[in-house]
Image (cartoon, rainbow, N blue to C red; front, side, top):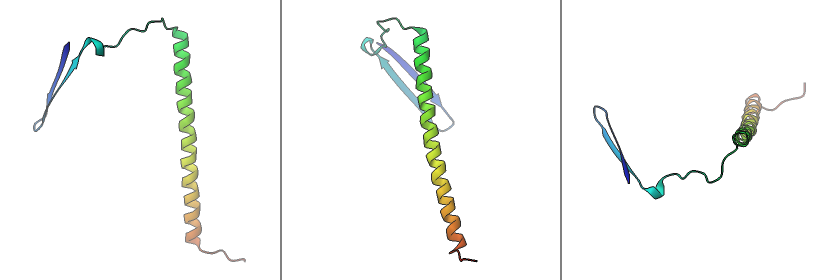
Length: 83
């Protein structure tokens, strides 16, 4: 078992934390070799999916904000009369 201890302090506060690591808790090496090209391709695919998800969410937020701004402007102008 290993013990890792961290101590830190400021003028008014002191913090101590300890972590015990046992053999069972240690990361195990992967049993099968990893193809670096396949791993890189998977990382890019995951990043692309994350960016695509953010883009969709950003669009829906922008559309909601635009709709709210149009509704606010319409309320401020009042009813429109034919000229």
